[in-house]
Amino acid sequence: MVNSRKRIVTIKFTDEEMNKLVKGKERWHFENNSDFIRSATLEKLNASPISNIAGTNIIEYDSINDSFIWKIRLDDGQEKILLERLPLDFIQDLSKSINFEINKRNEVLGKNKKHSVAVPKRLMK
Image 1: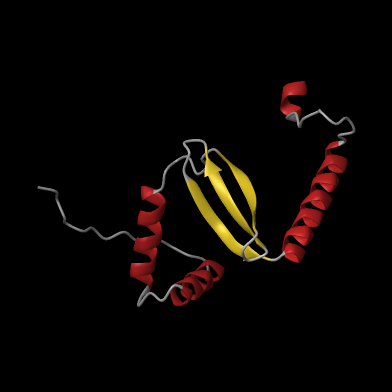
Image 2: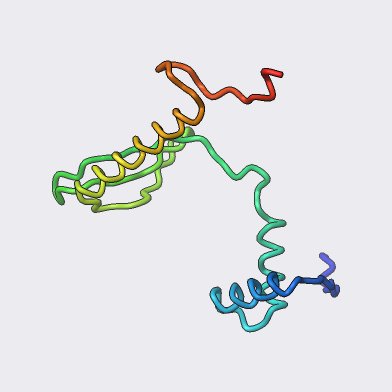
């Protein structure tokens, strides 16, 4: 049988942290600070240490609705639909925005060759 005895933990917050706590508690509709802190702590403790999984983005044209579907295809074959019925102008704007930010990143990195990749500076010391 698992020991279900609960223990008390005391923590100290700055005024700024306490304000964030109260806002968070209200935002996620917790009755009191203790329930909110307990929930947040357990969520962090139960989370996988690896927050990423491998997969690819798929943008698929839906000819029936003249729209697009954005989904993720994981390397294990699973698929998850992220958004459906995305209009063409949304996809075009998203594509333009992504390309702009990639170009900006490339400029910051000093990337000027098509097949070069980012290299951590610490490797070059």
